Each structure stands twice: as C-alpha cells, then as structure tokens.
Length: 448
Image (cartoon, rainbow, N blue to C red; front, side, top):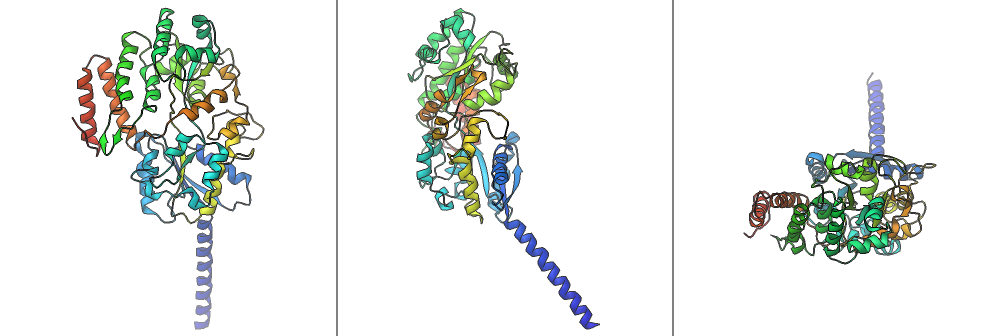
C-alpha cells in the first residue's frame, strides 16, 4: 500500500512539474505589448504571421488614452515588473517625452542595448531628425522611434485655389501663402484675398495652433520654470486677427463644425487645414462626404509647403530595459521602425500593402529612404504624390521644443487664448489665468 501511495505521489509530482514547466515555457514565448490603439499590435502580429520561425506569440493590452487611462496603467505595469510587465510599449507625441526623457525614462532600453545597430540604421533609413530627437534619452541614447512621420503641410481645396488664385499648382499656392518663409505675412495676405471671395483660409485657430506649437524655439518648461515662447505668445494675436477679420469659421478642432468644413458644408467655404499625412488619411478622408473622386470634396485637395515647419502627432515604440526577450523584441522593433526593405513594415505602410492582395491607405512613414522608393500618389489629393511635399516637411520639423507636460499645458493655453479672442479677458488677464492654472495643477515653478 505504501509503495502504491509513493508511486501515485511521484506521478502527481511529475505531472505537476510538467504542467509548471509547460506554463513557464509558454510564458517564455510570450511578448507583452502595451498600446493605446490596435495599430501597433496589428503591425507586430503581421511580423509574427510572416515569420513562422519567430517562435513568440504576442499578449497585447490595449487601453485607450481617453479619460487619461493609458498612462497610469502603463506606469503601474512598468513599476510592478515581473512576467506581466510590458516588453514593448507605445507612447504618442502628447506624452512620449515622459517615457524617453522624463519621469518614466528609466524603464526604457536603449535600442543599441537590444542589439540594434541604431546609428547606422537611422542613417540608412533616412529617419527625420525630429523623430530621433524625441526618442533620445538624456544620456544621448535612442530609446524610441516611430513608424510614421508627421511633418506638417498646408492641405488646400483645389477648386477654391483655381477660383480665387487662378491656379491649384502646389508650388504656386505655396508661394502665395508664404511656404517656407518662416513668416505668416503672406498667409494673412492670402486670407484677405480669400475673404473678399467669401472664403475662410482655415476652419479655426486650432488649425494654426498645431503649426505654431511645434515650431516654437523653446518648450513650455526651461530650467524647471514655465516658459512662454515668443512664437506661442504671438499666437494670441494671430488667433485674434483670424477672429476679428472673419478669416475662419471659428471652429474648434475635433468638433462637428470642424468636420463639416472638410465636407465643404460649413458656415462658409474653407480653403485649407494644416496637418500631416495622417490628418488626410484618417480624419479628412472619412469626413469629406465621399469615398471616390467627385463625391463630396474627395479628390479636390492638394498639399503644399507650410509657411513654417512643424510636426503634429506620432507614435513611438519603446522596449523595457528588463525584458528577458531582448533579441526577439529587437527584431520586432527594428522591423517596424528601421527596416527599409520591401518586406519591412515601412514599405508596407507607405505603399498601402499591409493586407496582401489589397490596396490600402498609403501613408507617410519614418523612413525617407522607403518613401523615395515608393509611389505616394493618392486619389484624394487629385493624383498628387504626397511624398514630394511631406519628405521635406519631415526634415523641417523640430523635436527639441517639447516637454512631458505639453498635453496639459497646451490645453490651458488654448483655453486662455479663447478667453482673450472672445473678449472675455484682456491679454494680460488671460496670461495670468494660464499661469495660475499651471501653478495650481503642475509641479512647475511659475513666475508671475
């Protein structure tokens, strides 16, 4: 009897060891991914599907940034560590500096420590410098890169350009609005001409703000103190000029009236918007009132150089410095952000070939090398090759004027500007209220 019990115990122990071993093996073959949309997980899964010998599966956690839910969840997972900690995680432009250069930068692995020859690959891929600057930690190591480039251009209606200016040629329209001049003078001259024809030059002051915000010479925080860059302060007067002269429809971005202007159904026709390629693909196209040339405003758009260089948005990929799967993580990140071959994500994304046998949306990617080898012509832009404009736009963008507090401070500033332009407050009172908001809500020194 004792012998039988002993034998049964051995069998149970062996079975338990096998189950534990299988669980550990399964855990070792899982890469944890944290993201705020399904975009990056879909990309990573494509790599897994196309490389059956990769040997890893993905465990994806997607938490939307709405209501501020993503960052606290990511921070908790990074701090807790262990087998459930993210191996790869995403950060968007609004808060990426927190993870590359700010409070949470200590969790990020340098790409070179993962085994990526990052300096050589960045050069070969011709990655826009602004994107590299944002992804570089205080020690000068690259810890994050993106897959898309978000340099901005002016996106305008061809039919309005022809009616008002006699041409829709991007080079000529660029000259009319002061493209590349570093000044808003020509832009406001064009606004006056458009006004005489009953047309607004942009939908709302937010369209101008995104260009001003990321073209400023310095960030909101300098040496630990709140800093109002001269270009950002000048936005108050630019915004008031737009409103006082009825140069726009006075909309707010991401609201119904803004989308209506993309369809040409606003209070008055609107000439254009400032933005990167993602604004065209994922905001304007779905809100233009059609899906083919001749429907709504689809096909009645073009892009030209902005008066000032800027970028807007983007997503960066980071790796956990404590990941136990560095080699596998490196393969995934390299394929998404640096691979310039026709088999890499960049080529698929630029040419709209994410799904085999299906023509998808073409997009502006991080690699200038890939875009130079790709066809950027799109029907939405009347057959224009958007890469001709966005590649130099990416080179003209600046990534050294950001802070980890930008998302919050920008909202305070936009509110203050609206209070001024509406006549609710004087400029001085609006600025004072802005400073008080920052002092009350952020750990930032403010001088009054």
